[in-house]
Amino acid sequence: MGIWTRKELSQLATVSEASDSAGGHGMRRVLGRFDLILIGVGSTIGAGIFVITGTAAAQYAGPAIVLSFIFAGMACLSTGLCYAELASMMPVAGSSYTYAYATLGELVAWTIGWCLVLEYLVAGSTIAVGWSGYFTNAMASMGIIIPSAWSSAPIALDASHHFVFSGAVMNFPAVAIVLAMTALLVIGIKESAFANALFVVMKIGVIVLVIFFGSFYVHPENWHPFIPPNTGQSGVYGWSGVFRGAGVIFFAYIGFETVSTCAQETRNPQRDLGFSILMALLICTALYVAMALVMTGLAPYTSLNVSDPIIVALDGGGPHLNWLKPLVSAGAVVGLASTILLSVYGQSRIFYTMARDGLLPPAFSALHPRFRTPALGIVVVGIFCAAIAGLLPLNILGELVSIGTLLAFAIVCLGVLVLRARSPGAARGFRCPGSPVVPAIGIAGCVYLMLSLPVDSWWRLLIWLGVGSLVYVFYGARHSKARTGS
Image (cartoon, rainbow, N blue to C red; front, side, top):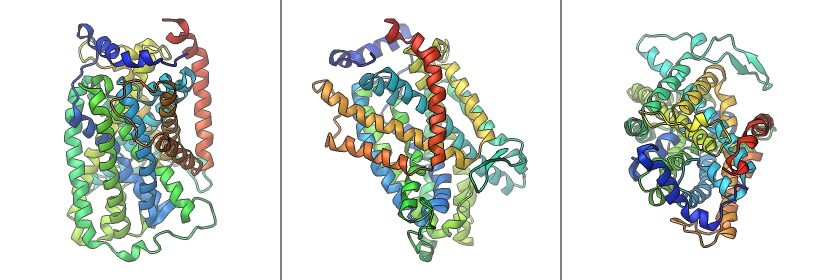
């Protein structure tokens, strides 16, 4: 049930394109290769580089956060190659949910789809919290002070990882930016892609400026020791900290997956999806590593545990870099907005595909009569994303995103191995090189990084999957089109 045959796989591209274009009532196929690369870069370069780099360096890896990015990038490269193969075979919306449905069946697909809900919702919320920090800083530089009670989360974690109330009311800037991006997405993908292209150009320009000019003012002593000695607690510095840092910042790479959710709005998905996924991944890895080196070289890593670590790093470079601060604040405000935009976009397309399979109410797959977008799904995702961003702090959100993402990525790699065995002759626009070794490396890397995350992350994942199981039992299984024969 839910396992596609070789014949069905070969017909999938034709069927999906016909169903989406018939009568002009489907999604609009307007995206080309350049659009997809910008979407991949736009959804990847966000909180990972503007926020999580600093917090992960301060809490887990020190200057060796550079190694964390390299290890996470290697795991992502294996996964990205697997995504590229499956995207060329199944050019439909749904990303790893669709791939799991085709290879491992409906129950596994539901599990992955539910993890993707966690991934995209919380990723968008995490980025919104980072956006709020930079926005508040930018307003302060202009003499407009936003009280912390109105720009921070009312819930926090104490030193023992227990929930406490911070005394704040809500992070209102974070809520506002999510709702603004939600409104833009309802209007249409073409308009959203154009806005994303502008956002990406601006934030990449700022990042390159910081890397280039900041490199002249690094203090090499800040890199020593490059791997700080372990404190005696697993995951806090030392090599265990490097790998925990890789697990925590892994969510910084999830943007390349958003490319695969664009399949039904891409003009030539078989040709362009795989190439765009890999190009976005390579560009982002290079920027992450360079920025991590410069940031930890400009300022002591212990000072970077803030929501705007690039500003703190520039302070460490002295007055010569003060002119960059307004640009960084502007670039972060614009750049993080594009990542929020694409997080909400990706989740709404997952809802769209799950609803078409009957696992969610059909209203989530209904397209707006004018804008041809799944408007209800976008609005629901936006509201929940805004609520999470307004209530929860950054350190909780980052770990939640990473563990759900790693599980989804591991199953995608497994899907490649399954399809190679079941449908070796199926048409593939791109073939993952080195199979079965590369997919196996992807699985092992993702599982290892999951194991390196704090135990609390596992408990939250299990609770989330428990809630998802109830939704599946009481709705999804009863309305599944595969089960009902429709």
